[in-house]
Image (cartoon, rainbow, N blue to C red; front, top):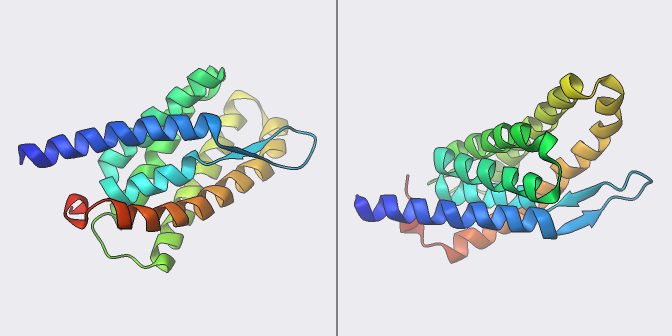
Length: 170
């Protein structure tokens, strides 16, 4: 039992650090005047969800993503990011962890996680910045969500090969 708990704690910390670093440094620009970009951090969140399960993935996703916001100089988003990304990890991790999910099931639950992202940031931006900013950022949130799913599907297949199956038991 102690060994399993230690393994989950260490993997969660590693995934949190990886989510933070990937979010900060692995970005793909979105064409247009806004300067928006898709970061690969959401894909790592989905990989963490598969490897760790709901609560552990939620902790890694929320903490790693929030730290990325703080280090990137956008602390206004940090509280929302903590909650939204943790919910993404929880939703996807609870559905996929420990199961032999096929790519279609992974896709379905990653899309659900992306809906959490889009709705969560939409509501946050509506309350903090108003309707104009919310409407302007919606297309970019959708692009970010789609990019996260694509990256997440690829990374989920890698996680299955790299992390021993016995480590991913529920």
